[in-house]
Image (cartoon, rainbow, N blue to C red; front, side, top):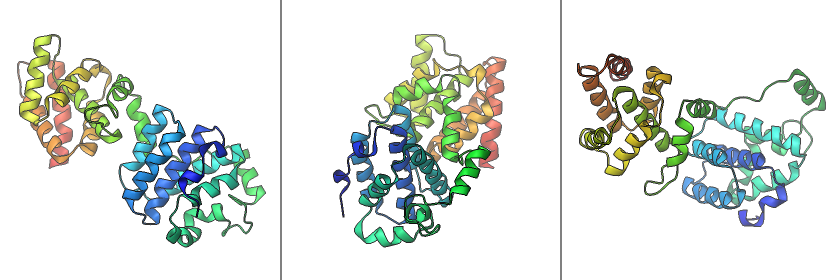
Length: 294
């Protein structure tokens, strides 16, 4: 079997979207074939070295590495890969690439897996890549049928569209000393959004006070507390939905961080010294946390 190093990205052309979709599909397939995820992680790092993906594309790769993908994720990822292959017309090279990075003892299982049907031709008859009847392809193209959406990508795009989120995410994703992945960076930005909605920050003194508060209440390191406050200065809380922020923070944050923030928000909701807008935000945030906890 060829090794991953024997297949160079240049053999597949210059299309970065193809490289992204190959990596994402490989990640989905790795779960379906029960590959050793430590070996998969090493393989992905090797593939990323020469892929020359954009920052956004690397963020997407991180999404697929967060947790086990479902069969539906795999189907959607494969559909997107097929869409690129139809455009680039390099199906044989794509097939060779995928099989080159699968372990020898998983080759037979890959040949039989439902996700690989179009790839190896065992469902449609012909053996060329993505073999489907021409009429079916033509009908799909004529109907303008959109590619299936990958839920995690849709949700991430919605995250980036929030006011001030993309710039903040880019500033802290994979940066030392924390080297945060996509999920941990999202939590950092969401934590900052909550602070921005419940805390009036207008001076350096308030900055230092809130850093110390986060260290004490939430047990954050000084670096993390400073990052949260720094981000909060550059967000636009009046344009953010407390409900959306709370739901996403609760979904992604660790239990300890959820517990700490629940107390932080509860204190703000009861703080009569806060302005009405800040207290209202705190109360709306708290409603979501209460629904989650109870």
